[in-house]
Image 1 (tube, rainbow, N blue to C red):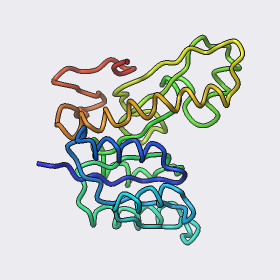
Image 2: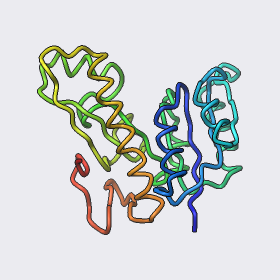
Image 3: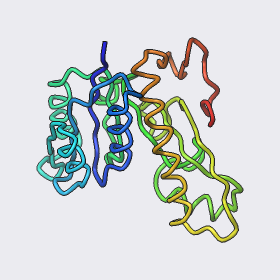
Image 4: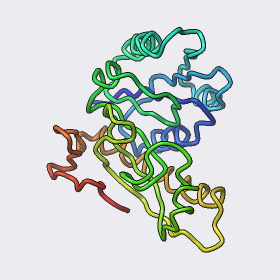
Length: 212
């Protein structure tokens, strides 16, 4: 059975593109049935349209509260009966009711080696801390912001002349490798979330997930 995927975006959609490409290449046994954006000008919508994927815009500015927005968003997502919801640069803090609705079926990617640097400005924070390495994590979404069980991490070495921009570019390259891979694992039913753990091929993954 092919897994049905809904992707949520807010911006350029480069991770969305990596997943589209992996589906096209037969790497992912899944179908992206919709891409939903909270911003009408998100370039990721164009990427989806170019790939023949249905797009929807649900502008958060049209809603009085996060609760109202997320209730409407759930209706839009549920219309596609997805097996998996993928957050690909969806810049919204989700309400507990939405998170609980997709618990174990929602993935996010975060540009740090979680649990380090939850939240924003991760590249600059890694530089300010004089870390020797930085990276990216794919994790299941829970009610704790950037705090769900980590599935997979990729590390990059921080160079002495790195800026937040150069570091971000190298992290982005890794994002486009590991996110499609984790989606592939989920669609192959190799990856599940059980209690507060990510489980791959029947084995509980360590707190910081697998590493490539």
